[in-house]
Image 1 (cartoon, rainbow, N blue to C red):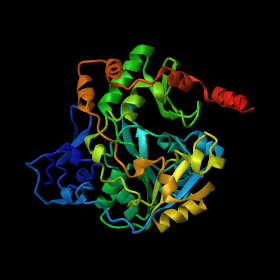
Image 2 (cartoon, helix red, strand yellow; image 1 turned 90 degrees about the vertical axis):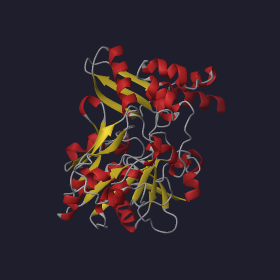
Image 3 (cartoon, helix red, strand yellow; image 1 turned 180 degrees about the horizontal axis):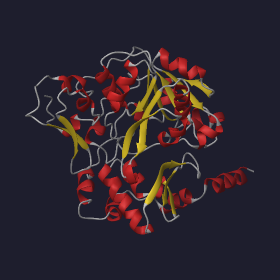
Image 4 (tube, one colour; image 1 turned 120 degrees about the vertical axis):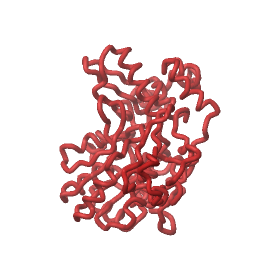
Length: 387
């Protein structure tokens, strides 16, 4: 039985739950809103399998050398529904059209949490599109993926880097019919915080949230918005700089303990492909930057390169240094703020609005005014000033 003595040593991937032959491990949520394994010691037979699949204890092997790096985007329609360049939907469509399965994160009941699900039809694909700034509950998806792989079906499994490493350890061998894609992960915020935030917004609008978009691009990809749609027809939309949840997340005040020293952050990974936003593209490939979303793609395997080559994408090869210049989250963990624990514990007695007011860094008023303007207005002003 693998014993967790410090919470920073558990990434919450659930591989231990999936591999346990006695089903004596469950994932329980702690007071901060993160899930950790709990072992029923009466059922445990000390087989040691849970420790062997843990990606914190045993990181899967990765190929030597640097990954290939690309700037890429898909069709206008694929980009429209995606957080960045629409690469995931192209990968997923390719697998689904072959009769395969695609696993990814979807919002759960009443939008209160994210959960991993498997889909086998194009009609279900929209629920896997877009970023979910929560750690998804993996449930039985590792086992479902293995069953499909053993039956000869093609599987695309997407997730955070630690989830992909947990899957690889759980499977225990390579499958030619498995394609894995991880994301450039900032870290996973507290599910407890998200639910407090939802309650706060639902009180304000007097209605239940029925749809969430963490990365709405209607005001621009670079200044994306949190958008909530309510049952009564009302709509909330705030740019990332002015939304309580996004700022608590992006200022690193609510991340899982393991995210501050993540062993999965590295340029070369065990996945086939890494996907993320190509921040800094205005300096590297300005001709591809139209503020509707551009992806950074890192390719780690021949399998990943093969499927990328058959997709209908606009791509440009870049160096790894160019790719990492403004995307340090690939290789660097965020620094834990001193008041991180105080923020999460305060949620037990204070509203999320009060917690945000007391702990978030404030923007200077000139910067706040500039960022509050629609991007279309800003671009028009810049054109006038250049004349």
